Image 1 (spheres, helix red, strand yellow):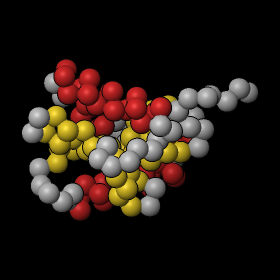
Image 2 (cartoon, rainbow, N blue to C red):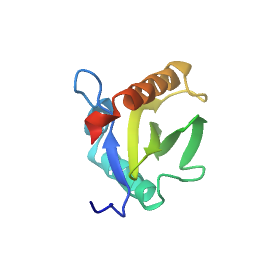
Image 3 (cartoon, helix red, strand yellow):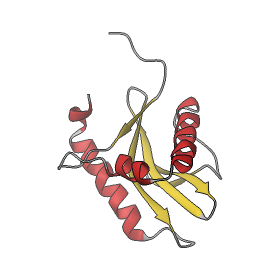
Amino acid sequence: MEESKEYRIQYYVDYKGRSLVEDYIDRLSKKEQLKVFSYLEILKDNKGYLDEPYSKHIKGKIRELRVGFSKNHHRIFYFTFINKKIILLHSFLKKTKKIPSKEITKAINNYQDFLINYNKYE
């Protein structure tokens, strides 16, 4: 089996089969979507790691991708996984200076669920 040389983006899928990050991105304007996708390409090119201000460590293996567009501050929590996968866990529009703890909790819960059920992503 040949191993991929490039990192790949994968969306976390919940128990109902939904990818809320993908749904979030789909609801953005076309310009905002283009900016998010360009940041995701840069993230892939940099093997899942970007320095501030583009990305920031949150907790454990979870990082946040920070996409600013006008007055909108989009955040996508992600982590890198084996076989060069970048898993997008949770996203939201940041409206306060500090990240609400409920958003971090959602990302941690999705991360833990992913680890338990990672075989469905193969």
